Image (cartoon, rainbow, N blue to C red; front, top):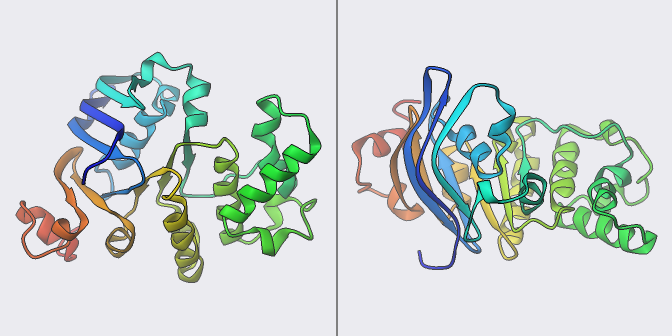
Length: 252
């Protein structure tokens, strides 16, 4: 796949004290694609995401080697808050702020200094629409976000991530918290969002990666086993036998 590289990772290695979590991983993501990252549990997928927006720095005694470049700049050269506005993150379980639905989405724009009420309302409505939640909550925006169903809370988390106007959206196994119908609805949201941003999707669901991803990175035990177009990874002739066996459910 050709296109402008939005994320470029070179020889990334991460250790938690004496345990190596990533072994010299190199890959990239280009504008307007969904990059799927698959692999068994403890293969380093979440660690990789945390390195993209530097939330890895919240972990004590972690050692990071190599380079992660976002929009042409080493992530270490960014102000951390600016980077995290550029790289939105959605975690496996929805973690809402103890605020109303409206204020959950309005929180980041207000923190960024936006005070105009009409502008705030426009941002909230846009983000809730992008997350396919507006029609369900537009008449109860003052309700606590925590009162929503699990699937709605997950979409509220996506709306909150979008309120930063990110150019990159990282999702870490969002579908473990929601039912299959809601999962499919969120997948439709992601297909629309990739027209506006690059999406990095960590998933344990092989079929989800097959449905959504333009390219796929298969990881195991902290190592990048194979990185190629989705049709190659899920086809009959991936480069590595381990890839073939994993996507067919023979281990993992």
